[in-house]
Image (cartoon, rainbow, N blue to C red):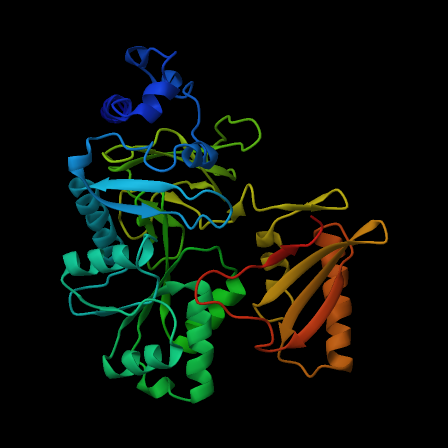
Length: 409
């Protein structure tokens, strides 16, 4: 760790303990004795459950008069996390987002079509603030009303689509169904909010005729815009002037060697409203070695491979959705869309894998099912029930797609 980074981290810790959350969390720690990378790594991690317990505004580290906005996690899996922002936090976020657009070589001549949601969720307003700071025309659609989305995309001659991968796929399929590809002017897609497989990426890119870029972020740490891939598609550049990153073994909490997969941990260096120290994101990735061909000095992490808390255990075997993505991407005739249903029947776990295929349902699809079963058994370790379904039969989402349904509990 360079001395200037250590100084930034020490300032971040001193700012964090101005709020009750970290004042209480570090009450038995002499923060003035943190003078090395090793000292810093002795600090306890912060987890989302800690943030939930701070509801509603326990994370706030500055007086009320400095807070200009709040955002919130969805709260779909428990108490929502409320994140307060100062004026500087909002400005810093927009600067990082503008940098994301620039990394994708998006300019003020582009027209940016924004489909992520607005409101308490951090997505839509982040995409818009970055576009406005860039000086580009933003078209703040938000999610839903696909017919109007496509009409506006054509009439406004949108050149950049911002979306979750699920909604980008839905739009691509609808445009293809309507045969209006010739009226679409899209050149690039900025995709975030959920992990997605190679087959899904290729379908979106080919059907929309765009180059795709991964954008990274999470509500607790500003929102989307803290990292971005470039045209070389070799990981996401992370803005280390605003954030400090570690990659740890999710079981032991120890740092993993460069290039090994682990859980991403983030410390905010500049955040005022709700600073975070050693926050466990539960996102699985790896630090990519070497410099990128694009010339940016910012380090890169790999595209998110899954979540350390997103796995399921079936018959003693741990299964990550990313492993299923990878397996299916190597089988001809299997589309990008799938769902896993896990049930407990007659005293045993049963995993059913539904997947879409362009093949006719019948003898051809039955042969494909047998191939999927064998590949699943060989590469993941258990034998599923494989069910081929017609294209577009599985549900599409305007937000994030749910891939795994565990009905055992």
